[in-house]
Length: 102
Image (tube, rainbow, N blue to C red; front, side, top):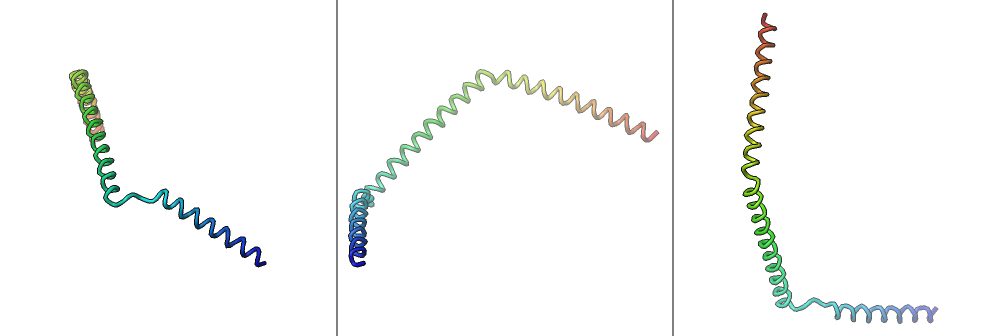
């Protein structure tokens, strides 16, 4: 039993030593270094968002320049068609009201 407890203690110490070695290898950098790293990464992220946003705006502007007048004409056509349908529906409702009223 003493041998078994000794083995457990050895493995505990080996595990503790390995854990300490890994902790030293993966220890965080100093606070100042970490803050600088965070600032650099945040700036890169911001620059990427600005760049991608600019590209998106350019693509949208190009699309509107290319298809804007077509979209406006289609919108006008749909508006006219919708107005016609609404007018016809109003006429049908009026005719139905007259029939009901006698």
